[in-house]
Length: 227
Image 1 (cartoon, rainbow, N blue to C red):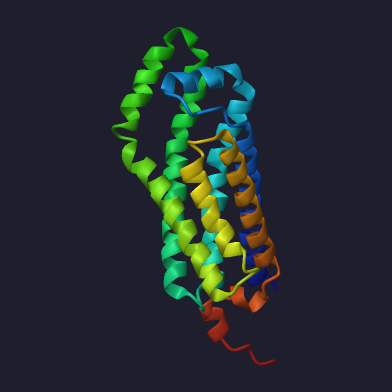
Image 2: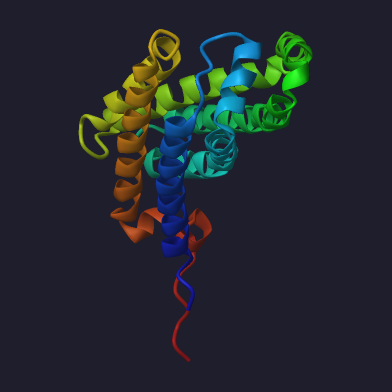
């Protein structure tokens, strides 16, 4: 008989661990995006292979990001139902926004190869970031920030996992979105916090009791009597 509860638990744990690895490697290989759009393209052109891997891993990490955090919300739902539901919803919105805008990063890989027209491509990127890409950029930023903060608070209030887990998730948000524009080392620090937080969540999910992952319908259905 298939154990769907164990399969669900394993999928969530694997998603969290996969997201941690993909994100950390993506950040470590990411070019310097501290300047203007023309500077971005020059940085990508200077390290095309690392930049391509970073962009691809960033986009690929968004699906396990959403799946994993929805699973975390499921784990927290009995103790902090409101925070868990809001956090999961916002996290999925953040993953969607980042995945959509990640398409721009993939296009930038090709733009960077056309060094003769760097200024033209930079103007296109500038126009996009003040036009059609704005809603997706906002969704990616706000969804991820608020989603992780709410889930971090939910984990802390629920007493699930080590007491430092929730603060680590919140601290990642602060360092990543407030400090990365100040120093490149903030990006590395945020990657470390993200990796520690998500790998801890993955271990927490993997060690959780199987009945937690049983659906309400299955839990309410009595076992069939032997014939």
